[in-house]
Length: 180
Image (cartoon, rainbow, N blue to C red; front, side):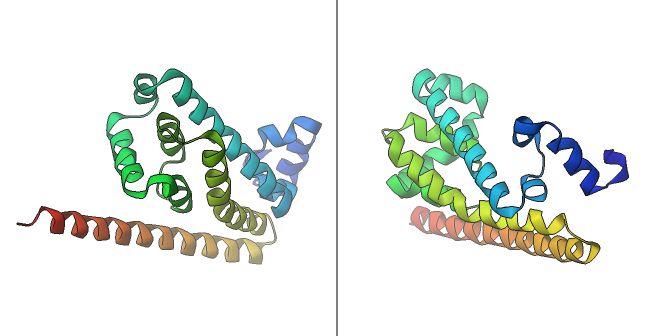
């Protein structure tokens, strides 16, 4: 089925699982339309974020360090120190910041659950909508697939450019702090 690269065949197969289809889907927007796909993707991301937050809250830093890396956690710690209560919202808007590491790190702070939940939900929403819309485009005709791929390429290039600017800005800021 998948070797035929036929979106309709894949869609029919996954939809044959009935109520369980969303759980096993690999392209929510292409299968369920961009609105339902976005809701499903956003809900799944929220469930994953809450799970990571809860694991960190219950089991603590030693377990989180085993699930991530110490260096990644240290980087996010600095991010949390710099941006305080806004750290989760800002991190969710940045496509190059690890989603899970931020959730684990938030669980290790004094940030309350609802503050974390709302910051994650609001910060994750723009990316979810964009990715779902692009995913829906990719499931269309050849013309829309080409347009979708170009849009996806442009978004990826923008994310990489934004990451480089972000890193350069912070490198310069840190160098100016270290200067005599």
